[in-house]
Image 1 (cartoon, rainbow, N blue to C red):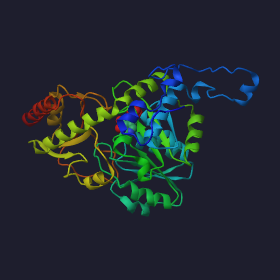
Image 2 (cartoon, rainbow, N blue to C red):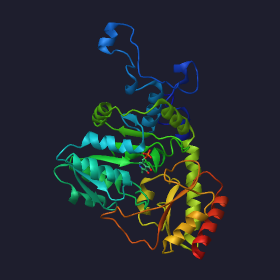
Image 3 (cartoon, protein in one colour):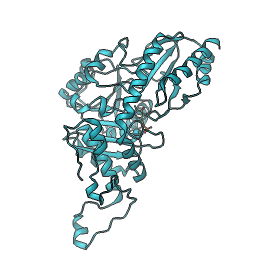
Image 4 (cartoon, rainbow, N blue to C red):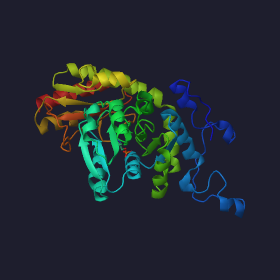
Length: 390
Ligand SMILES: Cc1ncc(COP(=O)(O)O)c(C=O)c1O
């Protein structure tokens, strides 16, 4: 497939034109939505040699190819594959690169379902799992074992937003022969280019910012050489392909991801700065705030911040947390983020094993949507007052 963009163009130009060349499909600006299992061959010889671009629905269609090509160009990787959810984009690479007797290092600030997969399926398959402090940096060297095959990173960390020193971790991992994976869902390739920081396999829950409208589940897995072939082998073996409508909707969302992210970024940062001064808020966990402990690493490696961060309430009891959440009228209570609407969710850190920190009160994660900031401020002001008087 062809894309009409070059790596030298600006990000929004690439988002607007990547992945699909209208000339390849009668001039239509968008790619066709191909629903397919069977693909016909013109004759027996072609069929025997499988000598045509498309051979079976699970191996790709013009729709899935368009999205994969667009993401691949943004990531700067050797190949990108689509799976039915962000969680699948985490589990398939782990299955691809780990075998019985291997060891994996996973950041303790990881998205909880990633931990659940490691603690259940990976352990059952005979893989040893160690969690490490997200702030360990080059100190990870001490945890690498001769059988460590994968170092799994997620930066910022889920819910608490610790920024990892990815280049230092990658240098140590590579010296020990381990593959570096990163869940880069928060920043997307717009705000953190994983390949420029020595990541080998990049995971995105495209459910979030690429799809962007809270109505699609999709994951992308991208890898540099020589890792792509191994990733593709396991992906094909598992038969875990994404559906055409979800791929199309995500491709559609990707076109506007740059402008949406910029709006999320600005609003979230403004609210984070404002919340830092508000009575009832003990702490704001947002990597772009100067007060945030790993802010320097964010400043060094990231080119922007997205719309999700946490606040620590200075109230101590559940009734106050519930009063805060129940008073919100614009913010909905829901988990999956990256859509157009603001959300709040109480966070449990009970799963942490090595990086648990004492926060002054309950942690609430906020996803800042595309609404007007003044309205969101008013909603949060009401909720803080409700917590105070509960
Ligand atoms: C960091 C991170 N990775 C992966 C996922 C999984 O995405 P999905 O909901 O598409 O399975 C999520 C979902 O919240 C997430 O926050």
